[in-house]
Image (cartoon, rainbow, N blue to C red; front, side):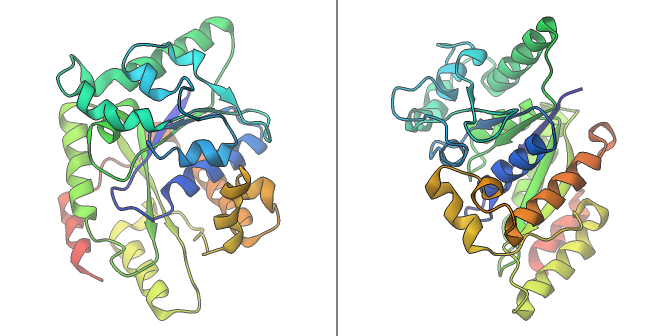
Length: 280
């Protein structure tokens, strides 16, 4: 069964898109069939995958507004077999305004992805993973991503204010689970941008593991120049520098995520954990 995972955090700069594309690349390199849905108008995931997303390119916006079928916008990643992407362009920035009065506006992406997976099944093809790169907000685009997903992966950076605003995100996840998508589960948390030279980073890791326990993946992704450079070459770090610490870390993260049973993942983090927001 296809695992549909939303990578979400309303804070910017936490490594969300970087985590999405590098986990996707690692899974594909391990033999999985992976689709990345770029739901961020900035199109950074599309850039890292090396797929076309210039203005006028058929993209997720056209799917949400009903102008294109989902399968017609998907492009293959040129560097990694088995990895493909549904691109985003700046047009997507207007989708929230255009959809706000639309019928079933929260379900547009879910219907598109479910239809695509059904089409694949009818052809005898498979897709092991769909990773949805949500924008850094809690608006209608992110809501579409959370309703479309069955699991949520939360990236949290190992820096000051790491948990600031997390309680708002957790309340949103609870709301979506209660009213729109009862299948939604928080299956994993990944710690990013770890700098072992600082005491603060170690403190953040300790606090996150204390509050969220087994949901936190074992591997911590280090801060890495190679990880930051890779998108400027239209690549993930796994093809840009396969032996760099960041590349090796994301391979381990992908392995740990793959080992989680998506159907048995933890439910959304309870309100008791909201106190973590004030612990750092």
